[in-house]
Image (cartoon, rainbow over all chains, first blue to last red; front, side, top):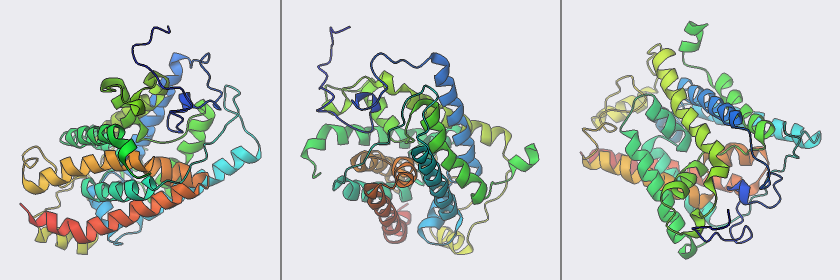
Length: 172
Length: 188
């Protein structure tokens, strides 16, 4: 097990809320493995999310253009009501200390401010208006048969990789 | 039922359903909603290249890859079985603006005058698809999240950095859509 081929940095060095398995506070410890059928639930949740994105036309390049030109309320309604429902849910989970079905305490990561949220946020905003897609809709668009979006996805993966490669040289 | 599902869903149905993804994932597996991390896990899985940012056990985050795989399948199901070919009721100002750039509205989710294999190597097609995609991948990771991770999950948890990120997403989008995109669309 420990004959690692990649020298993995200690969780402390690579502490990152995006990678929950590296998060020492997470009770999802080394010993805990999710049963295989759990992945089926994530798949089904993804299917539901994909259907919602397409049927609400959130994946439409045209709807994104309307949003950024203030020509339609639709996208603001979708994102706004999603946030309100999410906020109420998180409030209830915290208030009543609701646990996950495995009995784990639900700990939500506290995000730290960095200039990346400004520079990266602006860059993502440019990309969002250009491709008409944030990462979720990229996958949904491919599913609807817009196969050229595979190129958008590969480009996005390349962008992620280049970020990872040069992240220590970027202002943070 | 199928007929009702086949119509475009209004925002007050779709938005709350998207919001419910947050508690669902938390309760099912103590997972925080966020899509763009999947791009990082893909890098970690196929091209880690000993970069610290990609050196972790991506298999422990595999749920995220199942989720985005599901999103792709969901897109297929919606387009194949739940699509009544409802035309987009677009704002006429947008329609006429796009027509002036020779971008026709043909009922799809994406304008095929730009997003198609034939147009991938036109100047505007290449910029929007390849450069746009790169900015999505680079920008979301630099910002530490996207619309789902910051705007929905982060705001639901009242995180100030997520509010800042969301404002920057919107600012970037406004600048691109209104000031830069018209110039790009003029390049054929």
